[in-house]
Amino acid sequence: MQLSVLFVCLGNICRSPSAEAVLRATSKLGPEALVVDSAGLGNWHVGKSPERMAIEEGARRGYDLSALRARHFDLSDYERFDVIVAMTSGYRRSLRDSAPPHLAERVVLFGAFGGRNADVADPYHGTIDDYRTMFDVLEAAMPHLDRHLVRTYEARDA
Image 1: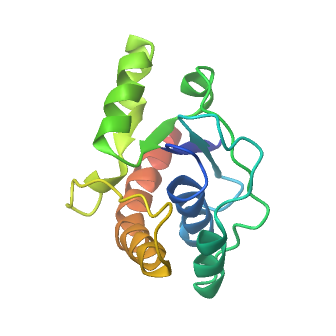
Image 2: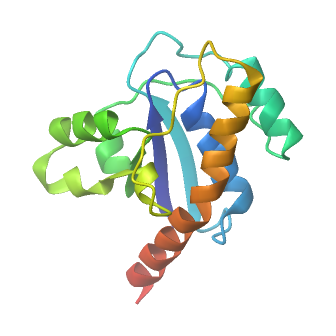
């Protein structure tokens, strides 16, 4: 049995693919137990690589984003993914509003993990420091999200 997780931001070229790469590299659940993907609410970057500075900063920290390609969030994702992680409270609200009522609770806010309950700032069109800050935020909260995912996975197995 696998647990599937989808990270969602606006264009799927900065925050959500970076979060995807960080979770894949750091999760206590291995690839046999965890499926990770990312998507964007907008469709203007579909098929494109993550932003150059996201790839560079990710590589500097040991994460490989080079093979990732942007895709558009699809309504079928509500059925396909067990946990849908929104990078901002606005995206969370939008995703919950468009979700089938029985699946809305699958949508969570990334910033809720680690006690920050804050949005992950978009570094798009920013400086390398903005991308460093984004990765700092992702790395600080990811262990908390991962603990939640491990508990969710173990509860399904019980």
